[in-house]
Length: 216
Image (cartoon, rainbow, N blue to C red; front, side):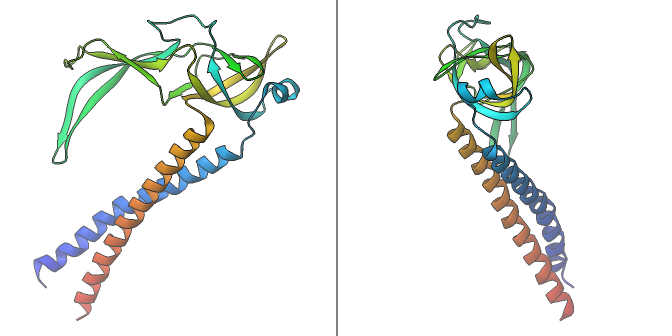
């Protein structure tokens, strides 16, 4: 049998090895997004009557009373530019996290103020960026991405208590609102799933063609 025909099965397995995990990741991400969409969205009224430890989400803004951690940021990630990773498709900048500030925060909700009580939440979709130089200098340029006073945020976590004040233990604080966050999660899930499906179909087709040629 020709070498080119044997190459089909190699290509087929490579595409399957890429496609099946990608489709699986997309399926898992989609389930995660839908599970998040089913969680309750707390208001000040429902927070006041909810027992501590109840999982859910909320939307608000960074309150004015939060102390600044660096420049105008009340919470942020610091990342150092470590050069570029290049391949045949181009180059991607490498940013290495060197600092993280995720302190307890005060949030303004439509009907009152809420205390985020913990300091170990994830930071995502950070809306404001500042970096130390306009030109990227390897191992020297540092960028800061984070939240400022007034930034809208979407929070995932659990109800808590801070004295008589409604409070929340945050697992994730993301910039924007619930709708935009869920839309982004669903888009990422669909992208992984359909790319994985496409690669899997190409791989299965290549293997099928190889078996057809082998049977002749």
